[in-house]
Image 1: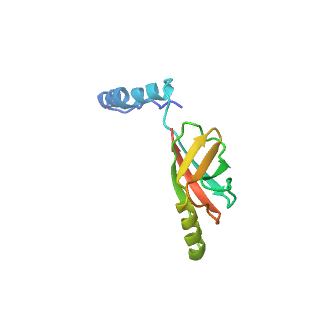
Image 2 (image 1 turned 90 degrees about the vertical axis):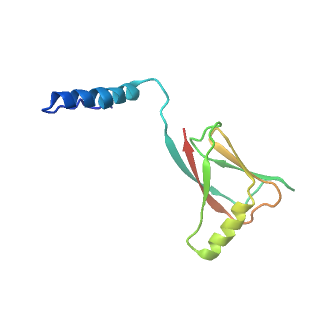
Image 3 (image 1 turned 90 degrees about the horizontal axis):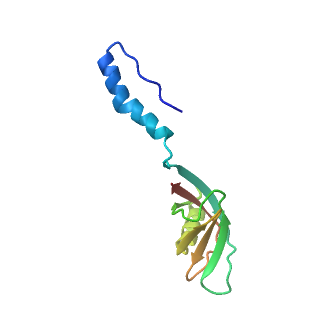
Length: 125
């Protein structure tokens, strides 16, 4: 999607704007460089964890996430206060989140959560 050249009655102003803004923008749009994208994923973490003793792990499918992504992760709490408190405690047990292609792996170093909770992942590439 290229930007359209600006036309005004003042040819000096139009040429300056086109030379300083429009032409460089089009060059950037059409170059082969990687451009920044932002993707947001919402995932559900269950109360089912792998491991008979710590550390406990859980793999969650996140279609589109990449192995080298380093997402910003925030819990998404229930609107019900009592449930939100339980979700907060559950999220507090998670010590590490790692990404692989289409999957995140959550690790709890000491205790495994007994409450399911939701997470939102923000990935900037």
